Image 1 (tube, rainbow, N blue to C red):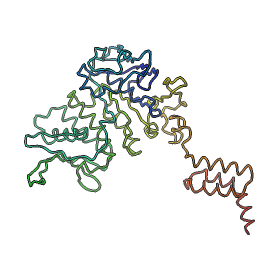
Image 2: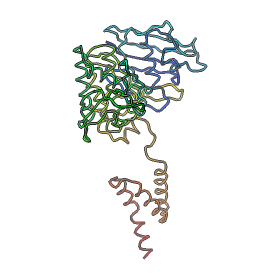
Image 3: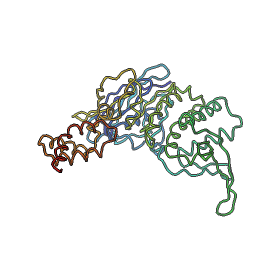
Image 4: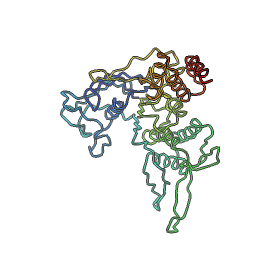
Length: 401
């Protein structure tokens, strides 16, 4: 079992100073771009990496000390198999870290990190099986397709754990979209440009449009698959246990990336169902993710005047979190957006109010009709503006007659 209880960061990347406590369940980090959310995840991951050749470390350039800083370190308090301990890395004598360093690392590999580069969207390529039976993969999405193929099609000597995980993976399709169902993973032969027969892997799913190759689903589906099936594949291949028994830490950077708002509202709930015994630490810029979070799951990050990161005080939420708040209320009062309205709209509102004060009928009319055309037909502000402008509009109409 692994749980990250607290992390302290000083002068690493864009973070000058941070003290952050995390809860055992879901932690949703939100804040402006460049504030340091990804740095937090990178530090947590690096603390669990084994000693290795620096050239083999994919995070080698992701953690650096802040220029001209007199101290640069992070410390983590974690619980490993019921024992709580502290872990520390000092960067002051290094321009960046090296994976070959002898440091106090967390003695647990129960961590899965799904970063942005692993989930970059690209046009999916068909997985080809060469004459030796090897499959060349080019992306995380390819790894998922290969896993399905090996588990479903090449299912000889399948362990009980693998079988349970495969059944769970099939359910993920319906959790994401009730109209999409897994059909099969299979091999298909086609002629190439040399008229040679080539063997490909195909993952087939049933949709409202009929049975199609999984590659033909939208980029949003593939983004969700990269997260959900990526976790299943990691647990299966690295730990060989049922996914529901995984009691480690899952880090996901920008969980809303490439997702339609409808799926942004679902994704955290599906994660809780998929990995109920894991600690989940994610970053997001999505008010839809925040709107559907439960009480205590939001970690709103801010920067003070001394460039220190702090946890912003949020308006008190009920036992339901912010599930009754509008997206606009979340953007302003939780995510710290100054105003969700466009600059053009705000300028027109100001001009309209100034025209009312001056009783400038021409300006009132101009700004009123501009604002009315901008607003949604059911927006109650339309009625308010009409009431404010009505007597002046009537005066002009009388004058025109």
